[in-house]
Amino acid sequence: GQQLNQSPQSMFIQEGEDVSMNCTSSSIFNTWLWYKQDPGEGPVLLIALYKAGELTSNGRLTAQFGITRKDSFLNISASIPSDVGIYFCVGSSNTGKLIFGQGTTLQVKP
Amino acid sequence: KAGVTQTPRYLIKTRGQQVTLSCSPISGHRSVSWYQQTPGQGLQFLFEYFSETQRNKGNFPGRFSGRQFSNSRSEMNVSTLELGDSALYLCASSLAENTGELFFGEGSRLTVL
Image 1 (tube, rainbow over the protein chains, first blue to last red):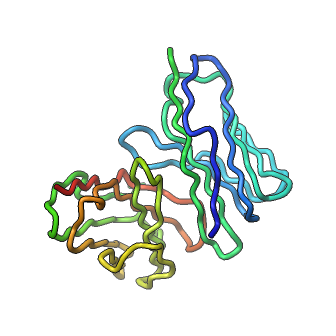
Image 2: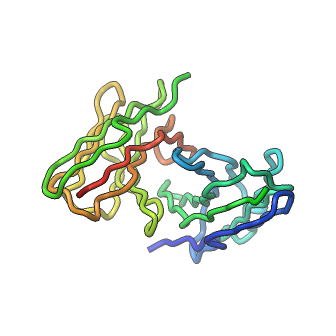
């Protein structure tokens, strides 16, 4: 079945550093989405990408839809303590089926 | 605009019991989907409902069931609970079906003893 490989699984960084995470798949997706889950909360949509090659920013966050449609990355610049949480990538196929990555757990040291 | 509301937030059950979880979607959202989240398995899709009809189902045993009411509220039920059913159960609503733009509730944390 379809799978997403999200990496890294976890990151422990210093406040102010930039962060990069990505998702890859052997399958093609029509939409890539990135969610963040704060401790004790449900995931919240950060960025949605609908077109191969698309690069979208949301504040300090930047995400790209890979040109092959099989991958996506998320960058966070100048990390702050409230960036702590689990980041999920989600791929949506042409049937509307959603595939979730395993998540990247981010910890930020002040 | 109120968000997605899940009840109860926390509950403890024993093996063999059954449990019903409730989800009220954002007003106007007709699609509701359910996910199981565990530390080892991440987010696993359970099922999706749209206009009271189950549209998609994940790979879970028949002990897991759900339904959606005419007001779009949804419930999921797990019968004959097992220890491995301990998890955070998340509900998400969306305006349309087959969209990745989901609005999640805070979840119902189930502990099975």
